[in-house]
Image: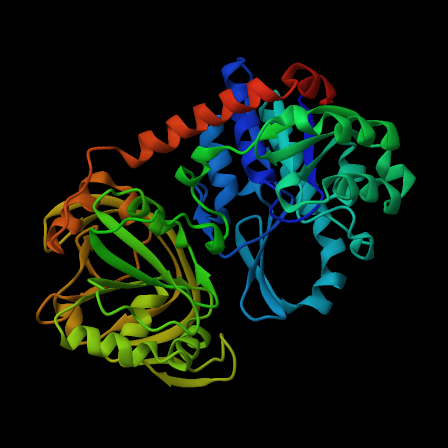
Length: 482
């Protein structure tokens, strides 16, 4: 029977996703068949799976580290925030419902069956399943009905390793405090701890490391220094998108929408040496030297359209277009570039229509059917073939659709303005294709580098595995799995 090991963190964003990705690559290099698993994830950065569903983008990266295509069993519960208090609930790749946080606490225990079903299917197919927790087990107010951390670990009888983030400060309290507040039965599942994101000489933490071992009785598996190449890997959180500081190059500005989704579209652009990428945050005006504006995907098109207008970005974008600048809207961003977004059934809030930016002569109607598919496409202006994926509700139509952005299976997709400088498309992932990215950059007066984005990610996963092998007791970690 396959073994499993779970990595939980002392908080959110302590590096669990990257640790699991690195451990997946290590296990594969040791000849094991390994799969990633995260019982519950909260992210609007989703990947389309081979079985026609969606999972968190971090689990898709971990699947890549395993040499596997992404599958819905790798992340059976995905929460996609639509407002500050409500999220869409996706179960085994398909939308179940949309609920507010308080209602989800009642729904959550009923999802354990689906979580365990997916987990056991993966165990039946592989030698090892590496599990990533969510948030922290120290959030004991959420322990009842938990499916993400210790609730899952107990139900699955899965041993746990606790990761602390020393870069935040207070890592001794993070780990010792976690043991102090969790239930003794939960603490008994924890096999040991590791320290992540250390800057400088790890030996300087020897006394603190020994103190944690003494206070908790847990085994320490090592201190992991900061991994400098992490920015080459897809970001799970929009705040983590790496935007290298460059003095020149074509200036691409992406709007940091309040419900930005599938923002890993930007990762390949950030790595291009001829590109200066800026994430524009709320309250900031569009820079005067902007060459291209990208309006990215959104989990709530109408809500983010209002957010965009509240920042005055709609006026900035229209002025940018009048000056001859380029604008690209992807998915929800495409919908925002049209004349109106009509939501007759109230799928994104109160039923009604929201006037849009008006740079494309199309209008969008929101519909309940969700399109989830990978596609082979051809970019009409350049003739360049590329692969991408669709993950959206709503349909857009209008006169500018007569000038398609792409063709998919012989059908027109997206729209272009008469001068070709304003473009909209439902296709995510286009910039991951090296050929398309080069052709698109050439069309806006920039040149692409000579590196392959996919090769860069693969090389970085190998470097991450090497990094963890150097600083962690991998044999002892793998021995904890059962």
